[in-house]
Length: 636
Image (cartoon, rainbow, N blue to C red; front, top):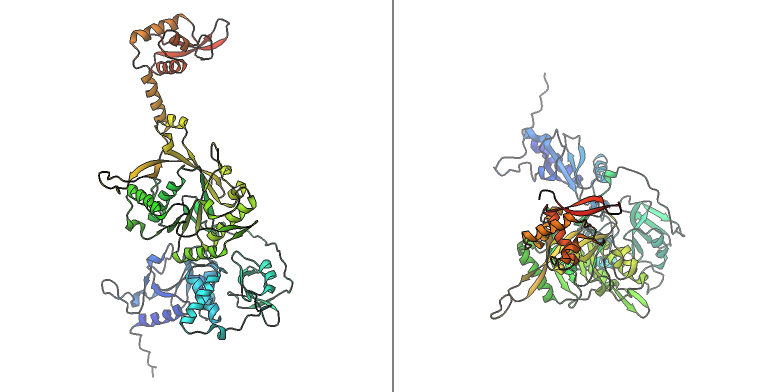
């Protein structure tokens, strides 16, 4: 007798969805459909369709998952920073393939650890767990907050702990009873002094001590924390390994880290924010004379950054809009408002285009002082740094522009050591807040051509910033060459110090006056505000054409018979082209009253040469030495 055959599954796609959904829970992902299971080349998140149920329907009411496309089931896992100390933007796709998964990264910076983590979770049949899983309530809350705010590995400022405690208090969680009391050397110490040597020996980019813990310590290439336990031992644990490592009682304070070449394509790109000058986690500077356009230029740049429009580069492309905090430590808020309104009016920028990404503040309303002088000592204002970093993080600000730099500190500018400390403090803000800091700075008095060495404060300030731009007002000679009237309305911007990108050509700018229309009575224009806009230096052909036109105008009113007489005299005698010669051709024009001085004579000769009336001929003089002479062109 034939054994009864099992009935075929009437809805195999439902069974498949439930299996893949279990896998999604295991690797903390979402169930998705890929377009083509046989070809994942070039696939991105936008190509995937998310499924919330096996019977999920599309826009047209059709079922997205059918028995025919079971092979397209996959799981999307991202935000690996919640599991490991990297892979913030990494996206890993796991194609189910009827139980034989194919795992590959499809988006974000290359992160092999993310792919390995998903592979280990599947092969080891253990679910992925966030880094805060199993930690005491306070530490878990700190880690959750750090993840939500995008802090780098080990970076846990003190205000984060205060916020975590407040959150736990709202949920009626007693932190003191849920965690063992820290071991301290005395009741008044803010942290365990025994941890200081470990802080020095195992410091990472964002290491700090809080209580009985060193956060952000780096041991053997892993980031984690060091704690002093009750028996006095120092133990290190990493979120990756979850294993305790006992550290020596006398830690080494210095160690050499071996370097190994790998695939350069796997290295993360520098995070340029705007114009190959602003860069994330670094301080940059713009230096120039007072009234030279630095402030107005930063306003136009700020609007370009928050809108993504190429306001200062007409041929440029749209860019990703950024959040900008523009701080002027000297001007009142109403003056700041006037300047931004004028620039927005000139460039036709609307509130919708700004999109809430611009923040402006005055130093008259809030203090933006990062260093104070106390007697002979310069003190970095740590509460200001803490508050500044917290605000930048909370607002997710990309660029902070501080104008002027001198108003943010009380250091002696001729003290290189002090200036280095102040600049380093701003670099700390950039690094801890994960943003770019632009410092607008003045030059020393009586400067001619402004260079990177012209900045007040000596070389210490220049050496601490990653990129420095210098501003120079157009000279009178440049104005005459370019054919502009008021040279003071034009200036150029050059990269005076570049650590990360090759220097390019000068960028020219000019001031335009924009009426705000805020006047009263008969005068409706009101305030006139200077706004900086792009300007291009004329081409060589345009300059040559303008010069030729100017020379032609010099002789436009000379009668034809006068020119004919000049030609006869030049042809009959030997007049040289060199104005230093005794028998210079220009002397003929001056002596006959045709030209009023040497400059006019020189211009008239040049004009007639351009017009083809005269030419320079190489011939021997009376002493049989070759020289250049001016003669009329034969037949003219």
